[in-house]
Image (cartoon, rainbow, N blue to C red):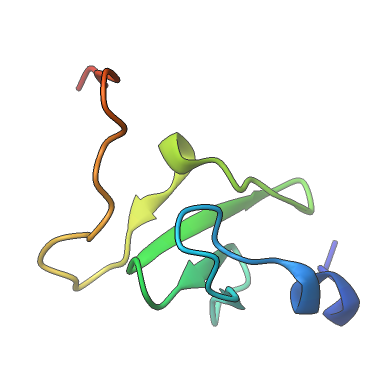
Length: 73
């Protein structure tokens, strides 16, 4: 299921508020500022910071963990 252009025009990164763009393989939404990709699951964008992955090829994501949060690896 494809994401409509109308929805894409409304979506922004929840961290920096930059508009996101569909990845070439249409499996995620890319924030160019944070250099992270939010996944699309079952046709729905998952705009949750903890679900985002660093952009392939980026040495380091600019996303900083929220104070007091600890993510286990």
